[in-house]
Amino acid sequence: MQETVETALATALRVPVPLTVAGRTDAGVHATGQVASADVPRAAWQDKGERLLARLAGLLPPDVRVRAFRAVPAEFDARFAALWRRYEYRICDASWGVDPLRRRFVLGWPRRLDDEAMAEAAAKLRGVHDFAAFCRRREGATTIRRLDQLAVERDGAEITCTVVADAFCHSMVRSLVGALIAVGEGRRPIGWPTALLSRTERANEVTVAAPHGLTLVAVGYPPDHQLAPRVAETRARRG
Image (cartoon, rainbow, N blue to C red; front, side):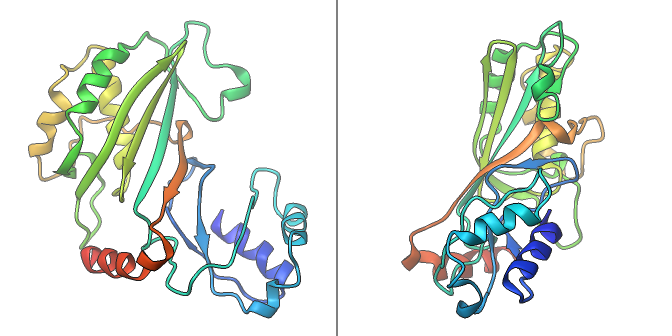
């Protein structure tokens, strides 16, 4: 997606536009709240106004859209200035399957899930932990994360797992959902996902949930006057 948007912007603005995105997603994962930043000469976009959105709509494929843009302080960085990222994973356990109009965004599950047990297990995972058991480790990268929210809610036949943190490691959200599904099926006890936090390596018994049920829905940022300190803090921590 990033390369697709960069190419469309370069065509519309007639200058190269390398983007910094708030969150990189695995292949097959969706994003309705992605944020990107770029350094663009003022003259290249200032006279385009709202016409730029229409121009991009004509250049982008039908499954990619830029919904808004604005000038931001030079300190803004879509990745390092972010305070939090919110993902939603949707599961349908109806006996008749997923609504055909939502099949690309919702995981169909063939058996009824105990959403109350899933919610109880999820609540125990909130806070600062080493999520090594739920991550695909990358050389030099930490697996310690602060999980601000992990909630499970049912609406009819559809279950939504909402996950909020300042950052995630590779495959972490899909692994957390996979562990909660195991609890929801009754294959694992409610305390099992929490017990995995003692691991220092990835837990192979945790199934990574399919990518298409996951969507990046929002990214939060501090006020403009706090951008520079936030970027410095994030860069230092990740270094």
